Image 1: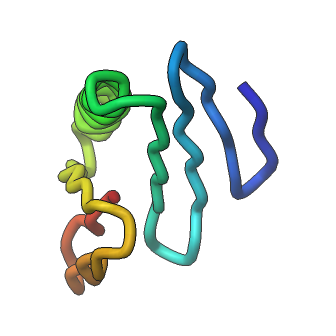
Image 2: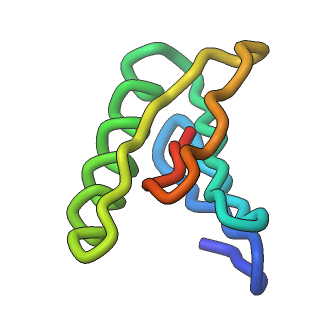
Length: 81
């Protein structure tokens, strides 16, 4: 695991997830060697963020590379990609 004040990277067998805090959003980028590893990384990161954000709930939504991400909802939880 590597991190700075606004970015972090977690390495898994077969892939990695990069997290970046930007304003009021947390942007995630999961990369993997194959679809099974990608599904594992997305599931693990998503479930941990949802569980750790109980006081201010987050909803984790993954988008394929190149897709237009959803915009944060005013007054609500910002989407996590």
